Structures are given as structure tokens and as C-alpha cells.
Length: 371
Image (tube, rainbow, N blue to C red; front, side):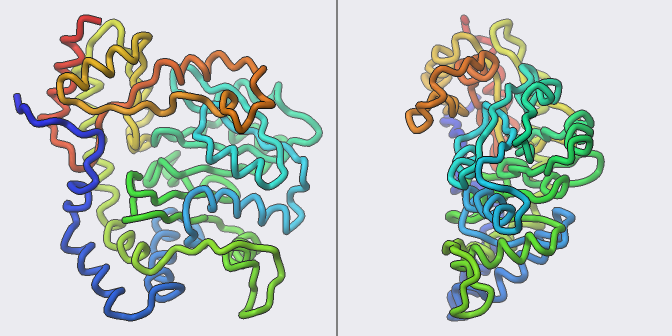
């Protein structure tokens, strides 16, 4: 076995996979002298919308802004009122929650399914109130969170379905890509994502013309035409270099995701330890394995063991949103499934640059752990 250390995510190697195309894309922008709101963003928006399967894609500064802009546009167009409630999984990354509270809306935290770690559709009905207006679905870890039960729930109540697609670029549900399943979706192109930029970046996808136009204006200071401001907006732009890099990487996304699936297949087939719980992987095309999460009651000991043997792991996420200081009003909430996941989750290395040999090595090390 190789004695080389296995990084959780080697961004240098990931970038090198498509290095010549990325270098050419950056050079093209530098040489053009046009760095914001130009043809590179326009081209990427068009191609990304086609890839996701929506009429619109609006490039923005990051994934949090994408979610924030969706909700603010719904407020501006009268689809939401401040104080309305948004159902959201309790075990999501905090950005999903921040987008809701920063818009004067109320997150209603719902427990996930213990096996899939995705929003539990069987728990939704008990959380409905007269102020419920939408469900913010999070495709956590790259695993499609959509189910027939959730779809039926939203249709029956007339609730908007919104998607946090930050971790699931290229994922599918019943033949459609996540990011096209509801009213609108937020996407993150943070460097570590399946489709990652060389800095921050994000997008909103939607089929709704009014919502798209409002989001585009809100992201440009609230301006509908130069120096004319209809909304109190913000400056949230995807820049030309990041758009060009994303454009260079987009044609390779499906192949990169398939490589992630091969790494995941090795883990799923070979890891066989009584103290290590493997994830429920779902349908093959319904998981793009942004993260490969295992669970272990002695998570910290397993992490230390792997580190001592040259394998870097991370935790997604050590502290759930309702236990964060910034949401101290939720400290009394009891969410045992969420808290159990956050106390036991460990993310194994996975990326399009990781070798199958390294995946075999990680599996063998786990199986040899004394536990």
C-alpha cells in the first residue's frame, strides 16, 4: 500500500484534472479586459440553465446569496410576507437557515430520516401552521432529498418547493436534475463543491420569469436599469473569471460525478466494520457523493486513528444550527435524530481526483480498526 497521505480533498489535484482548459479560460478573461457582467457569465448562465433543465440561471456571488435572493424575491413579489414559516431540515448547514432568518422569515426545523439523513417527509404534516408557506429542501451530502411524499405534501397544501442544491450538482430525481424540481433553487460553486470555482460563486435556477427578473435586479443593487433602483438590493455578482472556470468544468461534471460514484462503490462494498454505519445511498443517479458520510458512536476515536494512518477526514457538521450561539433562542429544542447525526457523522475522502487504490486503502484501514 502507498504510504502517501490521503487528503480529504486535494483541490490542486482536482483543478489539475482540467488544468489546460481552466488556464485557457482564465487567460481569455484576463486578455479581454472585461471582468464583470460580460459574455462569460452570460454564456455560463445559458449553459448551466440548460444542464439543470430550467429556463433561467442567474449567476450570483455565492450559495448563501442564492438562497437569500430567492426568498427576498418572493417577499418583493408578494409570495411571502415577513413572519411566514419555511419548513427546513434541522441538520442542514447553517447557510440554509441564515437565508431564512435574514429575510425576516421563520425556519421550522424538522428532523431528518435517521437512515438517509435527508428531510423526513413523514414528519412534515405535524409542523404545518397557518403561516407555513414553503419547504426548503436540502440535498445534503449530494444525496437527492426529494421524495414522492414531499412532492405530494407541497402540492396538496399549495406550498412552494425550494431547493438548496449547493451540494448536489448533477443529481437526479425521476429523470430530472435537482435544481429544477421546485419553484427555484440555490447553487453554490465554492471550490470544494462538485462543480467548484476558483473562489466563491453561486447561482439561482428557476422557470419563473417574474422571479428570475426580480432576483437579477436584487443582485444588482436592486436596479432594473442603470441608476434606477426598484428594490433595496445588494451587490451579488458571479465574476467573469469564475464563470469562465465553471464553463470549462461543466462539460466534465457528469464524468467527475461518476468517478465519485466509483469511489463510493468501493467504500460501500468493502467497508465492513460493526461499529461503522454506511450511508443509505439511494438510487445511483440520485447521489453525486459530494460527501461520503459514515456514522460511528466513537467518531472521534475513528478520526484520530485514520489521521494517525495518513487519512484526513472531516465532520459535516459538528454542531447543529439549533445549538449555535447565534440561534440561542433554540437552545431548548430537542431534536434527537439531528443531534445524533451531528455527534456521530464522519466524512471520508472522496473526489474526482482520488484514486481507487486510495479508496481501497481507506476501507482496509477502517476494517482493521480495533473499534
